Length: 189
Ligand code: HQG
Image: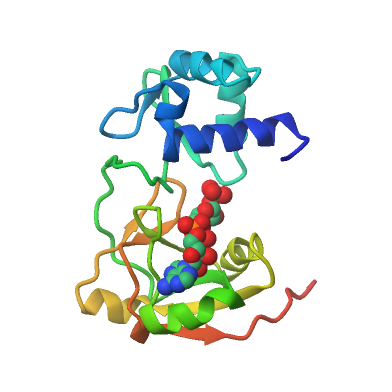
């Protein structure tokens, strides 16, 4: 558990807005929005010290811009990463030719066999940026970088979306589109 209160709050918001709203007694609408006032009540009931301003602050300052605020300023939602069944209303988009996914060695045998699957989330998360993908893998251990032939997938009618914060999403990536790249350390230049 992080000692930084804003990181702790960001993780609590991710849990509430992506995975377990019911645990906090909060309802998401069909597009994933929840009232900030209701979130305050829900988080406080779970022992998280919070007020509306601290939530707005985390939303504003999120490193990956994980959360979005409604036009009326009263509600927030996660822009991607949900396991709950909401539809944030993304339109299909033509992907770049190549996308990347960061993972770890222990998942490779299964990925070679089954390709990338979304597990609990609605989508497989992909990135146009190599370093970002490597960082995602590094959350779980020594990162392994996978290169995805998104152009071939699109030609084969796989549908891609891009979240409001720039994450590329697709339902699954069959193994024939996945190749393993070496994982050189980032150069300092
Ligand atoms: C792996 C963060 C075995 C996959 C990041 C990953 C991201 C398989 C894990 C976002 C597999 C799923 C999502 C297969 C995939 N066999 N393992 N067939 N297919 N996997 O957390 O992409 O900071 O659901 O490689 O920035 O790691 O939370 O997905 O390791 O955008 O905003 O199964 O989470 O965003 O893990 O991360 P996850 P992810 P936030």
